[in-house]
Amino acid sequence: MTTEFDELSLDTGKRAAAGYALGLVRDGARIGLGTGSTADIFIDLLAEDLRRRKIQIAAVATSRRTEERARQAGLELSDLNRLQRLDLTVDGADEIDPELDLIKGGGGALLREKIVADASDRLVIMADAGKMVRWLGGFPLPVEVTQFGWEATGRRLDRMLRLRDGERRLRLVNGKPFVSDGGNYIFDISLRRIRYARAMERRLETLPGVVVSGLFVGRCDFAVIGTADGMVQVLSRRS
Ligand code: 5RP
Image (cartoon, rainbow, N blue to C red; front, side):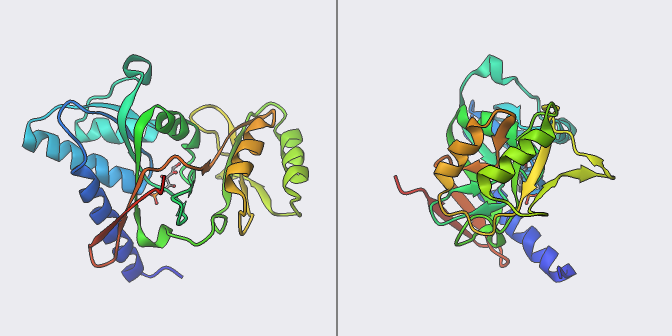
C-alpha cells in the first residue's frame, strides 16, 4: 500500500533527480524532453531556469502530454526532423537495473521516447530510488503493437514468450483500448524476471505487428537517482 508519506518521499526523490539533471543543460543545447511525472517536474524547473539564466535551448517532446506541459510552462518546442540530432535527452523510467538497462513506457510514450533517445548523443534518466531493481521484469513490460491484427500479434507474443493466461494484458483506459500517440495499442506483459534483456528487445522488435518494446538496453548513459532525503546518486553506464 502506498501511503501519503511514501508519495512525499517519491516526490522528493524525483525533484532531487530533476534538479540535478537541470545542471546538465547548456546554453544552445538541443534537448529531448521525456514523458511522465518526473519529466513534468524537470520541464517546470527547466522553464524557470531558462528564464533565470537567460539562456536558450531547442527542445523536442516525446509525447503530446509533454508538448502540452512544456507549452504551459512557457517552453517553445522544435521538431526532431528539423534538429536531426539532439545533445541530450532527459527522461524517466519504470525500472533501472545495475547495467542501467531500462523498462519504460508506463506512460504509454515508449515509441517516441525510443526514437528521441536514439537521436540523442546522451540519454539521462532521472528517477526516485524505488525504480532501481536487481532484475528487470517486476514492472509489466509495455509492448506497442499495431491495431491491425493486434489479437494475432498478441498470440504470437504468447508463443514467443511462452506466456500463460493473464500474463499479457491489453492496456485499457475507461474500459477501452489505450491508443498511443502513434495510434497503436499496448500490451503490458508480466515477465517477473527478464534474463536476456538485449536479446529479448531485439527479438520482440523483429516480430511483425510489434512497433516497439519498452526495453531500453544499452541506451542510458547516466541515471540520476533521487532519494527520499533529497540526495542524488549519479550512476554511469559501464562501457
Ligand atoms: C513514459 C515513461 C516514463 O518515463 C515512466 O513511466 C516513468 O514515469 P514517472 O516519472 O511518472 O515515474 O516511460 O512512457
